[in-house]
Length: 153
Image (cartoon, rainbow, N blue to C red):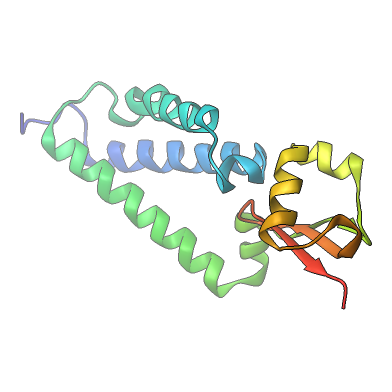
């Protein structure tokens, strides 16, 4: 239980490689994946964690190895958060920026499709903003996956 099969530094390297690879994959998969989970998105995230579990541990089931991995992932997450908070460029790369998806009551179909936003998502955002489509000044897909609607003045 306490005897590790791998050197401590191998857990750190494995954790860092898997963390960074998943960070890139999730970032490239689009902001709706991270923003508002559908049951399918949640399923993918659960399966991702199962898929990489052996990559992290290298077959080691020791308590120490698991704690080293957990600490590595938490430290990496803290580093990414600090980089994002203190550097505008890193924030843009890691978190993304808002995308204009509509203006003057018209949603841009090409951009909406590319961002994988459904008509139901657009209608829900309009209702949440208490805004009729013709009263919409602009609409943005935020970096966190939320849709922000601004009303005409």
